[in-house]
Each structure stands twice: as structure tokens, then as C-alpha cells.
Image (cartoon, rainbow, N blue to C red; front, side, top):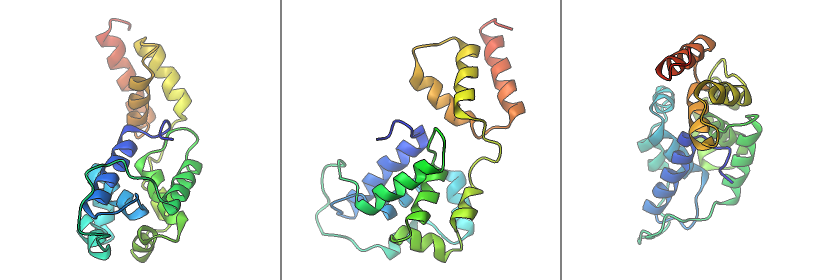
Length: 187
């Protein structure tokens, strides 16, 4: 289910599960994922904070499900969150980043997370602006990285690097590739 997720998106899901367990929830809900995104991406957290959405403001609108906190973080994903994740996948050709998850949460419309974001004026269109402006096709990034650093067989590393530099400009990507080639003596 998470093979298309970038490392930051996976961490957002992990911390969303943690937040759900702290609330005593029996399943992972969209608002837990929103808390996870705020926790792992300081750039997104800053932009959300400017709109009045913080971890504390989200938590203040949530009600604890029960007193006892479950010991396991292996909570099932709720129906509304599954829908939001599918919608997030529609936002990207290849990699799903935290920005895509935010758009999926708003497009899901029926959750507390969507309500919080929409009340702050953060529509799907506005949240799409959070995504990198000049994202190069993920397959192109993967091919260029593989050619530059010659580490075929280590798709995890290449995927992580590709997701990281997907936020970079064309010039920054070229500089990174040149630096890698220089370090490996491939100039």
C-alpha cells in the first residue's frame, strides 16, 4: 500500500498512527494523518500555521476515543482515510508526498481533517500550491540518478533521493548530479 509513498509521507503515516494511539483510537483517521504530516514536515507545518492550523489546534478539536492507550501502533486505516489516500494517489503520477496527502484529505471532504483545513481556507487548489512548483517526472529523476551514481539494485536509496530532489529546481538537480559524479570521479 505504501510503496509509492516518499519517506516523509511514510513517516507522516507512522506518526499519524502514533497520534491515534495517544488518543486511544481504534483506527487511523484522517485527522491523525494530518497531525502526522504537521509533525514530520516543518515546511508544511509552517504554511499550515500561517493559516491557523497547528498540532494543538487540531488536537483541541479531537475527542479521545477511550481512556486506555493501545500498546500497538498497528491500527487499521479507517474508510475515510483510505479514500483520502486513494485521492492523494490521484494527485501524483508516481511518488506520493505529504503535500499530496494533504490534498487527498481535503478532497475526502467528510472528515474532521478536511473540515479543519477547509475552515482555514485551505482548499485542494491552495494545498496543491504547497507541492513543488517544478516537479520533474519521477521516472526521469530515477533514471538520471541511476545513471549518475551507478547503484542499480538499490531502488530504496534511489527512490528516497528522487523524492528528495523532486522538490528541487532543474539547476539544483544538475548541480547535485555533477557533485555526485565529481565525488565518484565520473566527471
